[in-house]
Image 1 (cartoon, one colour):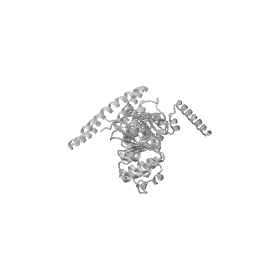
Image 2: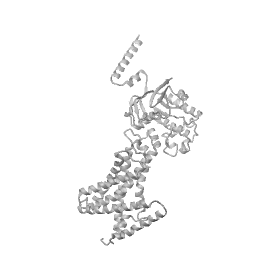
Image 3: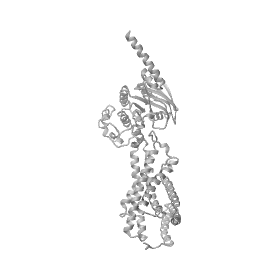
Image 4: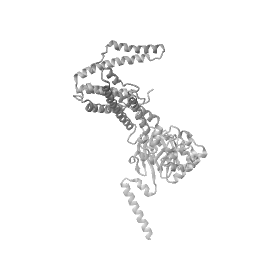
Length: 237
Length: 268
C-alpha cells in the first residue's frame, strides 16, 4: 500500500515537472525524463543544394543515408558539421550549435570526408593522441609501426582508415562518416564495421553515408534516402 | 652638393638607343618581346615626365591638402597594381580594399614616423620629403603585400582539403591556416630580406647610386640608403603582416568556416 502510494506520488511529481518544463519551453528535458534521449536534433536545416532537413538521431544509434551521387549526402554532413554556410537549428543534447565554440562543435560532431586531407609528412603527427591510436592499428589491419609511416606511402584505403581512426581517438559524441569503407575490400570493411559497432555500443552516435545497402542493413537502425536534396525515411529496424 | 653633371635630353635619348638594340634583336630572333618592351618604355617616359612636372608644382605650393591628395592617389594606384598581380582576389570591395587598407596603414605609419623622427621637415608634411619617402616605401610594400596575398589565397584554395580536415577535427581556423599564413608572410618578405642581404655586395641600391651620381658624398649617401632600407623593411613587414591577417580574417566567418566562396575565380 505504502509502495503504491509512493509510486503514485512520484508519478504525480514527474507529471508536474514535465508540465513546468513544457511551460518553460524546454522539451528536450521532457524527452529525457520519459527516457527518450534525442542526441542530435536537426530542424529545418537548409543550405545551397539541400531542402529543409529535419532529423532526430537518438543517442548511441547509427542511421544510414544513401542516395545517388550529387543528391546532397556530403552537403548534409558538411552542413551538420557547420563547415559550409547553412541555416536552421542543430542541437546536441538540447544545447544549440551556436552555443558551442565552432571548434568545440566540430570536435563533438566530427565529420570524416570520403577523401581525407593530410597536412604533415608523417602519419603520427596528425593524431592528437598517437599512443591511443597505436592501440587500434592492428585491429584496422595496419602494421604496428604505421604511426611513423609517411602519408604519401598510404594507399587510398589506408588513408580512409587512418582518417577514421584520427577522428575516433578524439572521442567525438557524433561521427559523421562519408562512405568510410568505399575503398576497402570486404575483409577490411568487416574490421572497420566491428570497431564502429563497438563505438556505437559505447554510446557514440553515427550518421553513416553509404552506397552499400547491405552495410546500411548491418550497421544502422534507421535508413534514409536522400534525393535532390530532400531526406526521406526508407525503413526502420 | 650641387657638384653634379646636369643631363641633357640628348643624353637620355642616347641611353634609350640601348633599348632599340634590344628591340631589334627581339624582332630578328622573333622573340615577340619588342612590342611589350617599347610600350613599357614609352609608358615609363610619359609617366615619369608627368610625375616630374607634378612634383615641381607640388613642391612649389607646399599645401597640406594637395600633398594628401597626391598621397591618396598613390596609395589608390598601388592598391590597383597589387590586385592585378594576384591570381585569386576577394569578391567585391574586399578585393581592392584589403591590399589598399594594409598599404595605407603600413606606408602611412612609416612615412609619418620617418617625417617626425628623422627628417624634421618644416612643415612636417612638406611634399619635398613626404612624397618621395611615401613613394619608396609604397613601391616596396606593394610588392610585399601582393606576393603575400597571392600566396595566401592560392594556398588556401589549393590546400582546402588540408585546412578543412583540421577544421573538422576541431582545430581553430588560425591553427588550420598556420602553414599558408607562414608561407604568405615569408613570400611577402623575401624581396626585402634579399634586398638587404645583397645590398652593397651584389648591387649598389638605386637611390644611393643616384645620390652619388648627383654629387653627394658616399658616406652620406650610404646613411640615407640605410635609413631608407630600414623604412622600407619596416613598412613592408607591417604591410605584409596586416594584409595576411586581414585576408585570413576575411577567409573565415563567425563560425570559423573556410569561405572560398568569397574569392573570385582564378585568372588565366
